Length: 124
Image 1 (cartoon, helix red, strand yellow):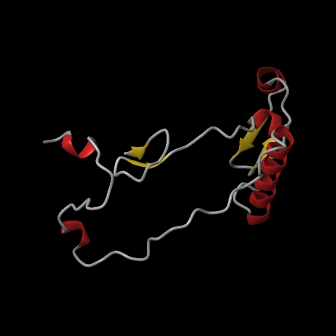
Image 2 (tube, one colour):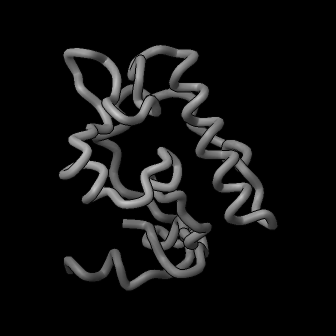
Image 3 (tube, helix red, strand yellow):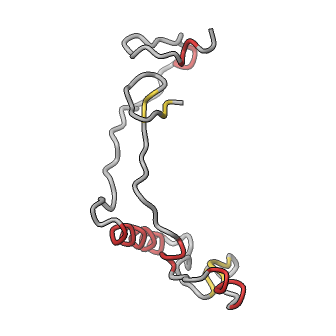
C-alpha cells in the first residue's frame, strides 16, 4: 500500500505516480513492422547462444557494461526526441533509510503524528 492520487504522508498515502511518456521498443530498435521483420525476414531481437540479435544489433553483448550504457543512452535520446519538454532523467529521491534497528520488526505499530486514515481501521 501507500500509492494514492496525491501523496499526503498518511500511512496509506506515501507516494503517487504520473505517466511521463514511453519509448516503444520497435522504434528504439528500428523495426517498422515487427510481424514482417520476424515472420518473413526471420530476424530475432536476441539469440542467447550468439549473444546478439539477427537483423538488429540493439541487444548485442547483452550483459556488457559499455553496451548496456549505450542502450540506456539510446532510450534517453529517443525519450528526449519524443518528449522535448520533459527531462531525460530525474535525480534520485532522498532516502532516509540508514539501518535496521535491533528488534525493529517486533516493535508495536505506532502511527503517532501521521494524518488520520481509514486504512488502519479496516481490520478492527
